[in-house]
Length: 160
Length: 233
Image 1 (spheres, helix red, strand yellow):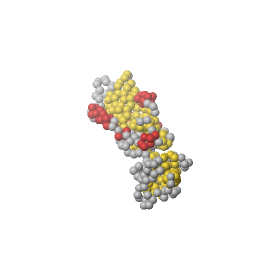
Image 2 (cartoon, rainbow over the protein chains, first blue to last red):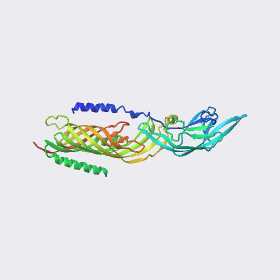
Image 3 (tube, rainbow over the protein chains, first blue to last red):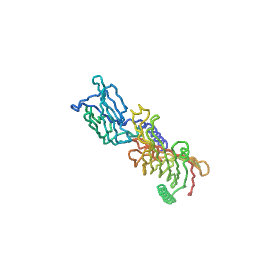
Image 4 (cartoon, rainbow over the protein chains, first blue to last red):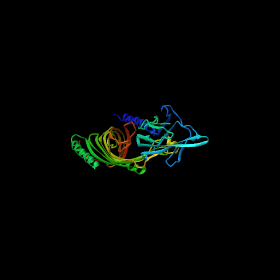
């Protein structure tokens, strides 16, 4: 091969290599567990909640939705543990008195860090999600998708 | 160790080819050198340490058997803006063996040379992962940094890669038998043993590995000593 040809070939490849597709993460994102509220009557009709708060087991509110109506919540289950408890509190007004009704949800799961690519690194996913819950205002909690690896899915249905 | 095994193999090869080369040649000689660019880069670039020695053997007119043996370590990380995604450290060795051809017609008495060549390279290395944070765009918008997964990721031992390299080299005659010269190298990954739940993002001797591509680019620049062993005709 003649020298100019060789240099030209090398230069072309150097130019190509400068446009790297792995500079920006576009493939994926960490996953949140989607909890969607449905009517307990038929299990398929969406039914929102109002006067709704999320509490930890000590009874401290960590997310207060106030008077907005909530149709779905996205949860991060801590990846440092394999079990997580939270209280779903519903406030109802009866004769001018507000009454709080609590239900405790216990999630069991296996957290995972899934490698995606150079630009994205790792995303959070879960496997083997299961749930136990009390049933005061909630009638049933159904885990639809125990393998949590996409934000587009409705992983858990809460019937009330 | 692994490196001493392959360097012994390399020396054996050179010995065999040296004995072959005694027949039919105009000039043959042996070169040994040290890569200065890796020493300089070790001083200047944080997280990098590298060392390389190289040599070649002219066994036929303008054709050389070339070898490079080196060790490199690179401690680096991936971030988006100021938010760390993950960090890792790769360290290992490589052996490059192949041929160089002189492609520049020297003027009579001139000793400078330009060569084109090819190598087959084997690299053996370990990768230890440091902090791993989750890529979580909703989280980073809210808290300004990625959520942490762990502060000390796993270590992957016994990783390896093999690749082909195209080499464009030049050497300038300095004085007596001393030459200063370097090369640009384009590697093409042939095979690799990848870590579980991670990738080989950097390979000793190959440099950065691009996602979805097999090409890598590297260089060297060093001082060498050339000993012409015999001239006939």
